[in-house]
Length: 248
Image (cartoon, rainbow, N blue to C red; front, side, top):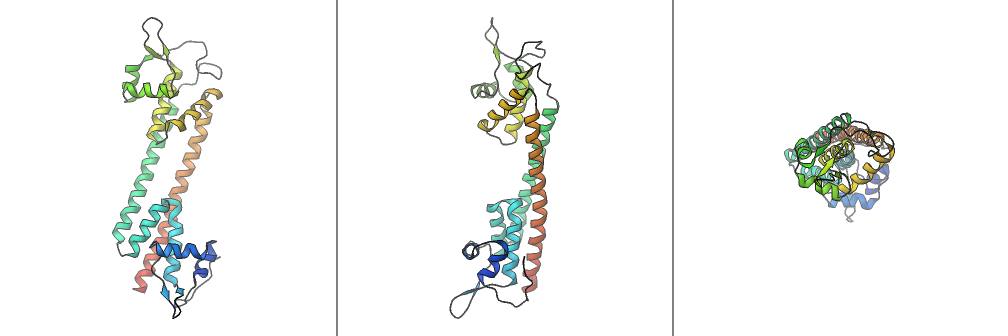
């Protein structure tokens, strides 16, 4: 628990480090990186810190969960050299990225919501009617991608169209279209092909979209956690800026 400090109290590195379970070397490293303002020095050369440094450390540690270590570092460096507008632009960029991630998640959910369940059994290629068959060109246009992209996904094992026995053309049935839509939306969300492959395998083996729905729930949770963490970080950063203004 962080103890109450007097305004003019001088703090040692251990006084900053202990409440957060940090090492004194970590505190020194944060100072060297510009995350904390430069420390004062005793006559013997030992570092001394103040409430300003304590506020900087609280702000940084609060910013990390929402913005990531690199961006949080850049924000604190900007603030400590007096470039507050630059720090605010970095914060704006993180919020814009979060909004973009939310929109991507919504697009994935819309795609999943429009997917038909597999025909029967755990394999979406079980015998049965294959309404909605498509060839590669029409499917690519429907998804807004190039046919070459569908061929690349096929090479990666993400979509597995049949071949027309007469023409040799690729034929995508309902299950293939479902898989292509999932791949398309997850790629928009920044997922790599090698990350998507095991997910699709789970969807096929389960005979439904339950594995994907679980991932979407987790995705929702992560975005909500980031949003709340950004609020916490903003509050601590604002407190630090107020402290700097008071000490100026």
